[in-house]
Image (cartoon, rainbow, N blue to C red; front, side, top):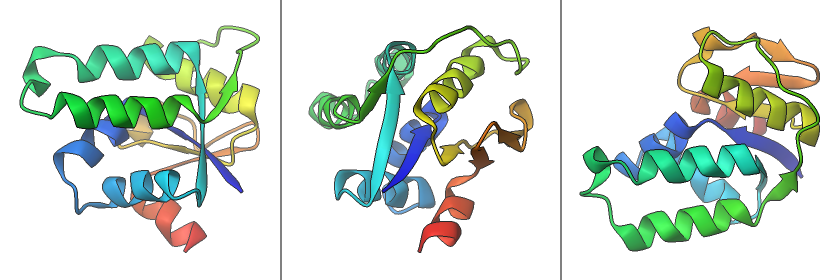
Length: 133
């Protein structure tokens, strides 16, 4: 099974645009085609961002379901702290990808990430879909 780490912007985009590439990636997670990889820091980031006031129009039930499904993924404990990305929170996703040996890290903001980290390819949702479908 293909292991993926989702950047928070992918999860948010999936919830805001239910017919976009990000939403399709999320559906593939929920149907077992993709295995989400998460860490405590990644889950905390998802929860913190999705509870922001600007997302108050999103269904709390849907957010809860998405968070629950993501938390059922491959849970890892990260071994060390990285400082690769200029955005410190993005480093938590790289740490998770490294600890889980993820195949892909999916983000809407590739400029904050290297093209590849260890064995993990950094891709946009469209690129992931092209690679696996």
